[in-house]
Image 1 (cartoon, rainbow, N blue to C red):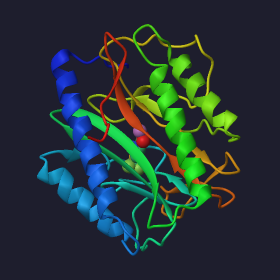
Image 2: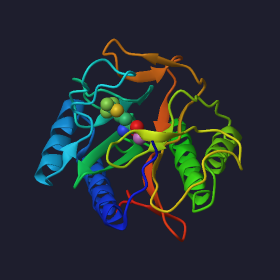
Image 3: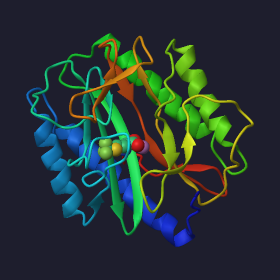
Image 4: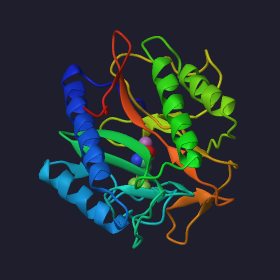
Length: 256
Ligand code: MF3
Ligand code: CO
């Protein structure tokens, strides 16, 4: 089922989105060389609960994971890209880290992910991946608006990823979001313009392009959650929750 939010629900979506953006920026600011992934998870828990919000992750037990996730943020390092389960690992200079966070507040969820380099060095291999997912996300958002079709978003994202030379994995992509984190419709990271569901005001979508440097194949860690590139190559992921409005698309998880 595809949810269409009322104006009152959209107001809650804005505050949920702002909270997710604030927490991600705070986690990023606190993260330095030597930070342990479990510390980041602890900070995420504190910040979510202090805001009177709920984690969309801690009790989440979908078919693509193993049992409840049990953590508050996804932490994916280097070759890990999606659903990175926080574990006892200290970050090193030059690590490529993705933080992915979703919370529920006043009954409405918001979901966002950022990728960045830890420490002072900026390895070119990281910045190319990160830049591409950010550009693809921007292109997907530009293609969204009332009357546009789902395929317009997918095509815009896929065009940017492919032009940068990346192969696209369609097992995981964006999704509808609203009273729960994962809803219809699925938003693949490649597709055909002019096809698919017609977007309308009140629809919330999480768009999330991700790429791995030299492969489209994923492998899963023994934890049953963390997805890595099959080749060990690095990967990046960028995600925003957007609302379709009368005038276009509004990004709800933009940092202030
Ligand atoms: N927020 C992720 C997404 O972008 C889903 C994470 S599920 C979790 O859709 F259980 F791993 F947290
Ligand atoms: Co998402």
